[in-house]
Image (cartoon, rainbow, N blue to C red; front, side, top):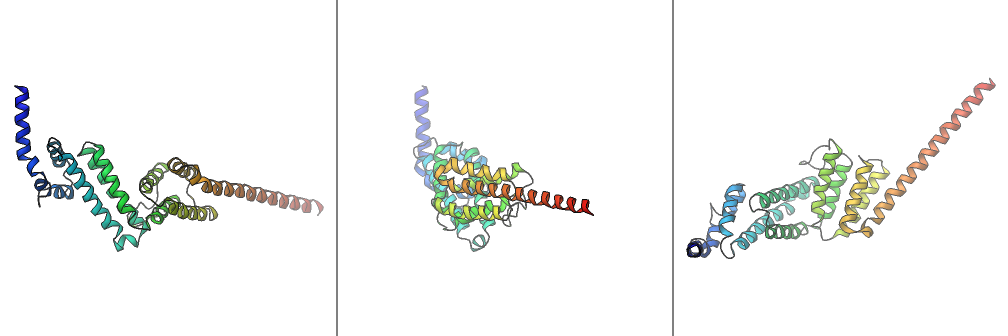
Length: 261
């Protein structure tokens, strides 16, 4: 009896949902895009649970969600306003990433199909703009200098924890970048400027970012960055010892002159 009841349910679901799933998903005004626009998490979860019961239903939703994300991402990376402000460019992408991470987790039950297809969409549109590696490095530079990383970013990380959180979000975008050697080129230049001008907010955070990049890309990727950081610290030590030596010499000279009067 149970098997018969299950078969009947499957027939009904196929007739009501399976045969019309494309039309239901794409229906203007009440389909998937409208629910995504309005951030209707509970309705999206119900839609997913319903479509997951019919053949090809979950895969259809995965494809449509990834396509929706892809269009939103292309709008961001091709917007003249965003291209004029690296901080806003990065902030918009991070907002989109956070939105889709939340949707996949809460509406689509964290299913791997959604995760993988949305990530592929990010790879496609992040690399659509050749300036993405530069903009991501510039945003990280702004945070590490304690400056405002664009109109949509926090004016300054109030603590190391907040700073670390912002940098880790930027590294999420870095993972989607195909031209990682271009990112390395820009990051190396920005790091050199921070070190030479003594503009870094935190040496510890600089080291942590380099360590995260090493974990992500390997030793070869960060060898030059680590060398620059080590050389600069050595230079600082030498300068500090030289300054101490000059101060001591000046004190000794003053003391000697005072004794002879």
